Image (tube, rainbow, N blue to C red):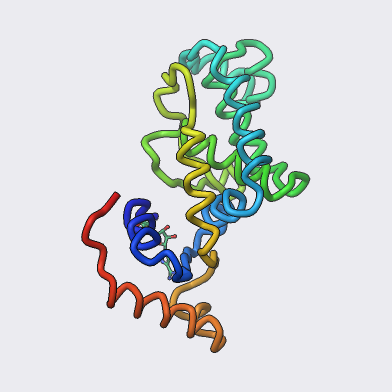
Length: 197
Ligand SMILES: C[S@@+](CC[C@H](N)C(=O)[O-])C[C@H]1O[C@@H](n2cnc3c(N)ncnc32)[C@H](O)[C@@H]1O
């Protein structure tokens, strides 16, 4: 999501409505939660951050991880550290998400993306073909995410229609979708972004 680009468009066209779309439903679910349920979204993130930030980083221990067959719950019990917190949470996001609210699923994925390797998106067989990126450096000091930025996004997304689909196939399926895309493209054409935020 080109953040600066969307903010720039909204600033320049305060009365226009916008459409954002991506095939990746996990990512679009994050935008939906930030738009429609931001207080529960940030509450979940604050809870995770609080638990995570007090933990030591933890090192890879191949022998132990092998002996416990990468059972991240057991590994976290044995050694409560950020590394095992991350992989336990990644596993829960992969296999337990159906028992969660959509907002919790979105907040957990956002947390994983903030603490995962370099913002990379990877899906693995062993993570149920869901988010499977390895952990990042795990060296956050006082915060995992910027709450002010999330609240800014929440306000910006109020005039944005969020879609999950294959563009242009799904977007053009109905006339309403077509008109939304057309209006958004036209507005972009008429009001090109000059000063990006
Ligand atoms: C390189 S990322 C760009 C992400 C973001 N739009 C940006 O500009 O920073 C490409 C994105 O395109 C999405 N994508 C690929 N093919 C698509 C399609 N046919 N319809 C909708 N989204 C698609 C992928 O899921 C991925 O999130």
